[in-house]
Length: 118
Ligand SMILES: [Zn+2]
Image (cartoon, rainbow, N blue to C red; front, side, top):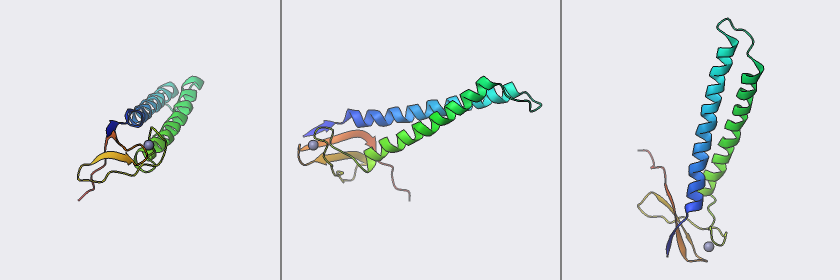
């Protein structure tokens, strides 16, 4: 039986989005700090500095989250139904699919593996 694992795939998408948003926020705060400091290298305002620190932390946290989510998708995949370890289905397609022997379900994550470089 083939089923779609919408949860893990969606988590990975969200992790990427979160990281990009955090990165954009950090970039925006950096510009804000530079603008508020002025061209003569003055002291940046407290609010933009606080934003920069906060968004910097957010970048780190979202990066960690992305690593965990993608690790689950690639290396530590677990069956969404029973929670047991499910081995990867190896064939010619790059699609990340896993087969759970207990549930007899082949899970399609909706993600493709990275093709190996030549
Ligand atoms: Zn299972």
